[in-house]
Length: 311
Image (cartoon, rainbow, N blue to C red):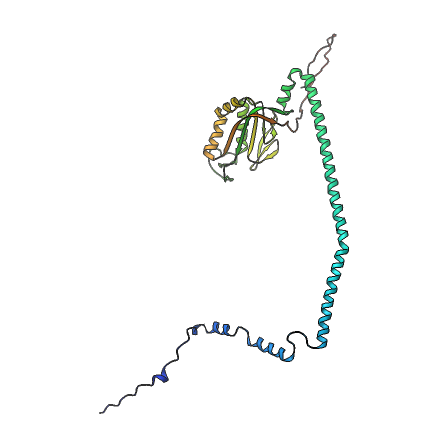
């Protein structure tokens, strides 16, 4: 048996053509190579052949374009003319509104001046009544009632919330009746500070410009502190008239002064106290006489009571 040589297959006929590196991305390649769809290209070519591409070439088309431009110009011109015509009217209305605002402001200022004058008149009559019926105690009565401005030596105490203090629900010693154990200054903190200053010898006290009297109330509404129903915002500046250095030392050594120190150390409440050579406290906004009754006064020769004086 003779062997037949087996012819090797021609590699030129069986070799596959080398694949393109981007053969797997044929769709993306086709999109990139033909970014403009064939249909759009054909439509553009037909328009160019028919003479529709670019500017209009026929007389009718040119006239239509000119008419459109003229119409647009007319619309713009009419709009500008109307704006120019209405401008004086708008300016007049604006001027009238400004005049009304100015008139209302002037009337409010006049009423405020009248209120200030009446308040000064009432204060003058109150001082005269205190002088007439209070005798040498008039100044003391005015001071205690908070009806007059006070200037003298004293201390300045500034209390502010801790940095980054927020409302929360803690369980510390300050937690009571909804107040959270945080670094926020509470109404009862201000109450303790004020009471401590009174007990340390303060003669008159104000908080953020609000003069305190025997009828003043320090309360809370949410997170806001109210003094005589007027909301205050931190920092809270407490001014107290008295013997400056002695008042400052007595307060810091008192129970309420140590309480304030605990707030500073444990809760981050910021405090600062300084002795002032002169502080000025305004009078209380309103001093209301809630009760009045005749006070026993001098008697006439026949023994009748003339009944001067009130309380």
